[in-house]
Image 1 (cartoon, rainbow, N blue to C red):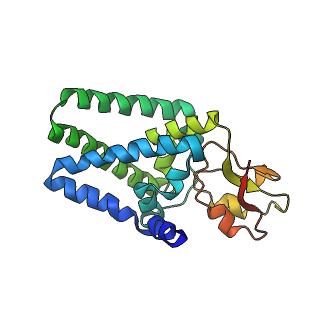
Image 2: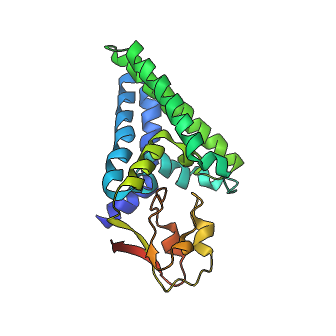
Image 3: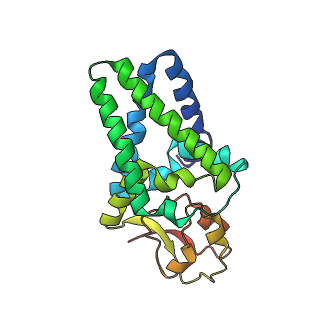
Length: 215
């Protein structure tokens, strides 16, 4: 299972490419996007934004492809604020719902709504990665925002923990593309609502002070 998980994290972005390609021939393939809309919100109830950092094909595309060309700059606080994120959420959901309503009963029309949404937002994410870092889109992704809000209201049961062995060397901080500062959680659970649990901070920690612990 561990090998399957590693394979998925590295190559699942192929599904995104397949989604975009197949939908050009038959827009009904685009309806599969509903999975990537529902899954992060559903999984957030149990594991926070784990989906975003490990299972999302687009997130893995940013990690394994786009990251090679990203400027890796810090994302402005405004783009991470809940005010901006809620505005993006409301705008996109309004356009999405109106599109579904207009094409109700027409699978091709509904598929086009999904297709446009995925393609346009993916392009936005790519462009933003050239300005800031490869996970910039994840700061204000509508589904990510909902997942973050769900994470805020849940009792953390399986999140990363920063043990007392942490020496605040700040190596973990430089690895977090979401701008979270793991060493500030020394001796506590890393229960930040936007932690996507990608594990990069744990991998680079020289003291192995970051890992999973049941709350």
